[in-house]
Amino acid sequence: MSTVTVIILAKNEEQNIKDCIDTVGFADEVLVIDDFSTDQTPEIAASMGARVVQHAMNGDWGGQQTFAIQEAKSKWILFLDADERISPELGAEIVTAVQKDEPKA
Image (cartoon, rainbow, N blue to C red):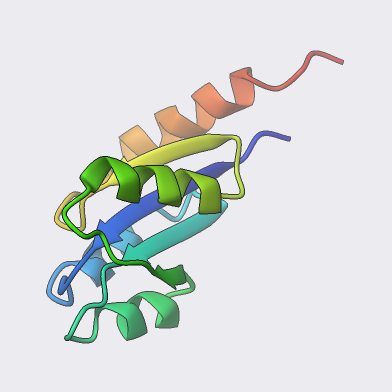
Protein backbone atom coordinates (compact mmCIF):
# COMPACT_ATOMS: atom_id res chain seq x y z
CA MET A 1 0.00 0.00 0.00
CA SER A 2 1.37 3.40 -0.99
CA THR A 3 1.67 5.93 1.79
CA VAL A 4 2.17 9.69 2.06
CA THR A 5 4.49 11.66 4.31
CA VAL A 6 3.87 15.37 4.66
CA ILE A 7 7.11 17.17 5.49
CA ILE A 8 7.15 20.60 7.07
CA LEU A 9 10.49 22.37 7.47
CA ALA A 10 9.99 24.76 10.36
CA LYS A 11 11.60 27.29 12.63
CA ASN A 12 9.59 29.38 15.08
CA GLU A 13 6.26 28.59 13.44
CA GLU A 14 4.09 28.25 16.55
CA GLN A 15 1.55 30.65 15.01
CA ASN A 16 1.11 28.44 11.92
CA ILE A 17 2.05 24.84 12.68
CA LYS A 18 -1.25 23.72 14.24
CA ASP A 19 -3.42 25.00 11.40
CA CYS A 20 -1.07 23.47 8.85
CA ILE A 21 -1.07 20.04 10.48
CA ASP A 22 -4.87 20.20 10.88
CA THR A 23 -5.22 20.16 7.08
CA VAL A 24 -3.16 17.04 6.38
CA GLY A 25 -5.23 14.37 8.08
CA PHE A 26 -5.00 12.26 4.92
CA ALA A 27 -1.25 11.73 5.45
CA ASP A 28 0.13 8.53 6.91
CA GLU A 29 2.97 10.48 8.49
CA VAL A 30 3.50 14.13 9.35
CA LEU A 31 7.18 14.89 9.73
CA VAL A 32 8.31 18.25 11.08
CA ILE A 33 11.99 19.00 10.64
CA ASP A 34 12.56 21.68 13.25
CA ASP A 35 15.52 24.02 12.89
CA PHE A 36 15.90 24.37 16.68
CA SER A 37 12.93 26.68 17.23
CA THR A 38 13.01 28.91 20.28
CA ASP A 39 9.20 28.97 20.51
CA GLN A 40 6.69 26.14 21.03
CA THR A 41 6.75 24.84 17.44
CA PRO A 42 8.14 21.36 18.23
CA GLU A 43 5.89 20.85 21.25
CA ILE A 44 2.76 21.88 19.35
CA ALA A 45 3.64 19.66 16.39
CA ALA A 46 4.37 16.66 18.61
CA SER A 47 1.14 17.17 20.55
CA MET A 48 -0.73 16.86 17.24
CA GLY A 49 0.88 13.53 16.41
CA ALA A 50 3.65 14.77 14.14
CA ARG A 51 7.06 13.19 14.34
CA VAL A 52 9.49 15.99 15.14
CA VAL A 53 13.17 15.75 14.29
CA GLN A 54 15.46 18.62 15.15
CA HIS A 55 18.12 19.33 12.55
CA ALA A 56 20.03 22.55 11.90
CA MET A 57 19.52 23.99 8.44
CA ASN A 58 22.74 26.02 8.54
CA GLY A 59 21.57 28.07 5.55
CA ASP A 60 21.32 24.99 3.32
CA TRP A 61 17.67 24.64 2.28
CA GLY A 62 18.43 21.82 -0.19
CA GLY A 63 20.42 19.94 2.43
CA GLN A 64 17.51 20.28 4.87
CA GLN A 65 15.13 18.90 2.26
CA THR A 66 17.45 15.98 1.53
CA PHE A 67 17.72 15.21 5.24
CA ALA A 68 13.92 15.29 5.53
CA ILE A 69 13.43 12.93 2.58
CA GLN A 70 15.83 10.46 4.18
CA GLU A 71 13.79 10.61 7.41
CA ALA A 72 10.43 10.04 5.67
CA LYS A 73 8.86 6.61 5.90
CA SER A 74 6.52 6.83 2.92
CA LYS A 75 6.80 6.31 -0.81
CA TRP A 76 5.06 9.62 -1.56
CA ILE A 77 6.29 12.91 -0.08
CA LEU A 78 4.56 16.28 0.04
CA PHE A 79 6.50 19.31 1.26
CA LEU A 80 4.49 22.11 2.87
CA ASP A 81 5.48 25.40 4.41
CA ALA A 82 3.95 25.92 7.84
CA ASP A 83 1.83 28.79 6.52
CA GLU A 84 0.29 26.62 3.78
CA ARG A 85 -2.99 24.71 4.03
CA ILE A 86 -4.40 21.76 2.08
CA SER A 87 -8.08 22.04 1.19
CA PRO A 88 -10.28 18.98 1.72
CA GLU A 89 -10.68 18.75 -2.05
CA LEU A 90 -6.93 18.73 -2.66
CA GLY A 91 -6.44 16.19 0.12
CA ALA A 92 -8.97 13.91 -1.59
CA GLU A 93 -7.17 14.34 -4.93
CA ILE A 94 -3.86 13.41 -3.32
CA VAL A 95 -5.38 10.26 -1.83
CA THR A 96 -6.84 9.34 -5.23
CA ALA A 97 -3.48 9.84 -6.94
CA VAL A 98 -1.71 7.68 -4.37
CA GLN A 99 -4.33 4.94 -4.69
CA LYS A 100 -3.82 4.92 -8.48
CA ASP A 101 -0.18 4.12 -7.80
CA GLU A 102 -1.15 0.84 -6.14
CA PRO A 103 -0.08 -2.32 -7.99
CA LYS A 104 -2.87 -4.04 -9.86
CA ALA A 105 -3.90 -7.37 -8.34
